[in-house]
Image 1 (cartoon, rainbow, N blue to C red):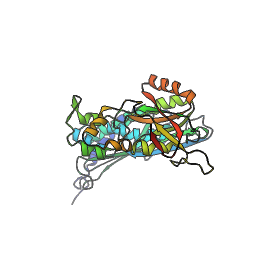
Image 2: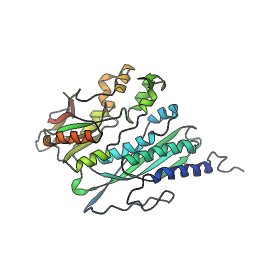
Image 3: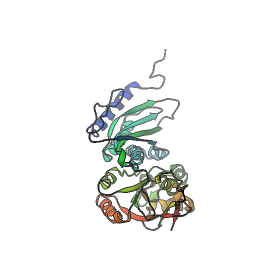
Image 4: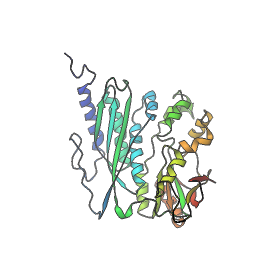
Length: 343
C-alpha cells in the first residue's frame, strides 16, 4: 500500500505553506476584495466611477533568475520580480493593477522557502497597490528537481476606455523619458548565468549574486500619479529583448511604424550617455558579453520609458524624481527607417 506522502507529496507541508501565504496576503488587501485566500476563486468588485471600464491583464514569470536565488539561498526577492514583470506590462496601457494571482511549482515543497517566495509576491503587490487574491502551489515530485522552484503569475488591472494608452497619440518631436532600472531586473539571465559562474565572486564589496538578485523596479505608483497630471502618449516596459524589441511596441501598429497613407514612419531616437548605466552591465561586458548586443538583451539602466509632448517633459521628469524614481530625457520621436536608432 502506498499513500500520497509516500509518492512524494507532503500534504501537511502544503497546509503549512498556505498558512504562510495567508499572512503575506493579508497585508495586500485593498477595497474591492470580497473574499480571502482559501476559496476556489478570488472575488473582486469592479471599482465605482468608471463609465466604460476595460479589464487589462498580463502574465509572466521570473525565468532563470531563479537559479541565482537557489544558489544564494535567498528567496524573498524573486516574488517581487514576478509581480513587477506583470504589473509594469499592464501599466503600459494606462491601467491600474487591481489584483494578482501566483503559481508556484516545485519537486518537494518546503513551506519556509515557499513562504519567503510568496512574501516577495506580497511585497511586490504592496508596491503596486494591488491585492494578492490567491494562487496555486503545485508539488510535482519527479518532475522538478528537489530544491528547485518555478514561479509565475498574472495581474488584472482596469482603465477607462477613453483613457487607454495605445500609442495613437505619439507624434514626431515627442520627448522620450527613461525611468531608471534597479539593475538587470529579470531578463537576460540565460546569458548572465553563462557569464557569472560563481555567484559569490566579489563585486563592489559584496557577492555578485546579491547584485543580480536586486528585484525589478515597480513603476505603478509614480506613473499613475503622473497620468493624473499630464497626457502620456506612449509607455514601454523594457524587458527581454532590451531597447530594440520593446520600444517599438509602444506604437499602435505593434512595431510597424509605417503608414499606408504616406505619413512619415515614426522611430525612436535614443541618446546614449544621457543616463547613468549601472556598473553591473559593464561587469557583464568585462566577463564576455558582446558590447554590440547589450541593448538587444538588457535594459541597460532604463526599466520603463514614456513618450510625452515637449511641453510636458520637464514637469514629468521633476515629478518622477520627486517621487523617488530617477528619470532622464533620453531621446525623442523622429522619422526614418530604423525602429530604434542611437544618436
